[in-house]
Image (cartoon, rainbow, N blue to C red; front, side, top):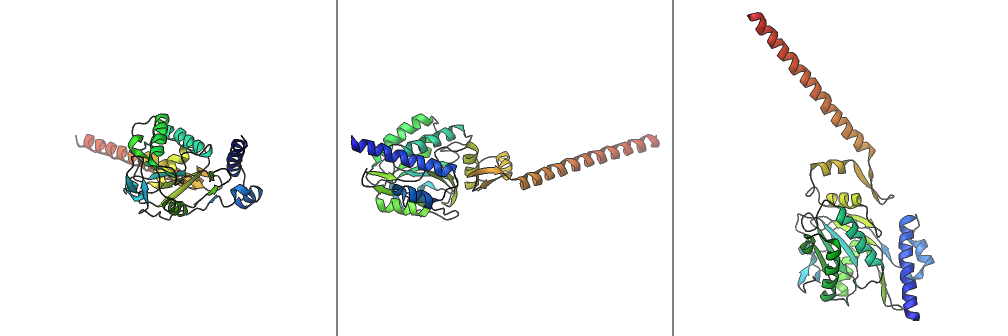
Length: 283
């Protein structure tokens, strides 16, 4: 009974601290000083760097695959690291992803891929397959069946991927659980880290704009790209905010086009009027 209470208490502490980190400008060092269980748990951003595509994993069908097989030069990838038997935090992250993806106009499996990787080398593809089935039912988007993969691997391969994206985690021997941050990654079609989104809930616009950015213009329509031109990612706000400078530039361009159109229309009418006058005088 004491072990269960300790497990619940420690997991609750991890979730609480994660939420506090998201809400307040508190440094990781302060959190680590206050909660020894989280010492060494952090996210070190490697924006613009590429992950090693030759790392080997087992997919939810029991097949050996490289992480690079999910990068086809066409679709961006939403990557999530955690583990499938996580008692609390990972479930919150999964639920946050599902809630946002349901609201997106972009579809997993058609516009982008989703890849979940277990950091627990003890978990196998059978557990991954079971978790995938549960989350696909909750998501209820047919294209996600082929567009969302659940992977497992040994500790060496997982650690290399985690280090590449800056995902720092640790195993707590006392409660036999992993402490880890709550974050998802958006990567370009060639494996470049494009954006980090933190927390257990993800604003639909943040996820949408992040995927459009990660795709390097390969997904979405013209309107999407015009809208994205008016927003930029603000690290302090941890999301996309209106970029006033680009809004003014876009507004100026639209105004210029409208004025040019009106002037052109007036000139066209004036020329037609002169032609009619000349024709009438000839008769």
